[in-house]
Image (cartoon, rainbow over all chains, first blue to last red; front, side, top):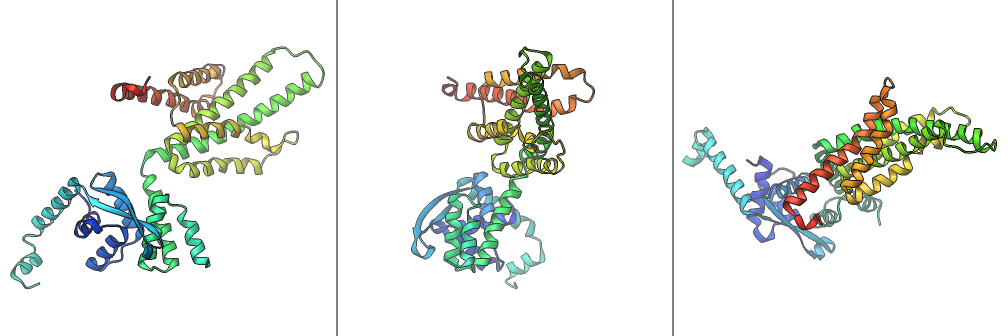
Length: 109
Length: 240
């Protein structure tokens, strides 16, 4: 099973779809989790997920706002989608009877 | 160009070209402070390095090869330099007739061993862990620096300690470039090393430095034979 940060990264990449690349994924993670995501953590996790076959990456086009530098585009592989689903289902199962999950279902939050 | 952007450009060269392109682009797009960017790039590089050391290969290259081999080969280099100097003084400078005496045979055998040990050790060091080879090289210089500082033989130059570096540099360059040698060459080197070390087998205490320096040759034979079988089974067209 993937780790917590790996799941967060896979989910951010899946959410961004065709626009998933380093800076965008980092921004997505920081805005949704409220935590700083270092470039080191981001790219080493991307490399690890790619070596596990859960992600595919390639160099995209260069843009002026990036100083003419290319993006490292990211896409989930079918195994990546399955791994993220497995993690999500596991979290949902273990959380089912937790008070915060029950409160959330009742709309208390 | 400001100091911070110069430092950022310099440290970014620690990354691979694709990664440098992506990371510098991300930093520009995010408008991140350059000093923070430098910390991010260094953090990424350190994470990569730590990741590499999770494997046994860099440990073997650095602590099983670089340090013990350079230490032992320095001793052999000095021994060869001293024997060579003695032989030149006794034979060449005195105008004596040059014959293959036991002393000369031993000297030649030691020279061949030095070349073979240095070549195979450095070849394996370069081929088993290419991405940490710089650290292995630095570690191999640690015993050299120690011995160079304490070298006290007046008749010899300090550079004699580093005789092994020439075949080692040759082996390292090959190891980094091709990773494998032909099975026949590997067997020849291993057999030659083993035969040349036979006279030392009866010497007490010699087995440790001998095996420290000889195992890379047999490691090369084992890995080359394994890879040849793998290619034969999976990519038969590459074995021709």
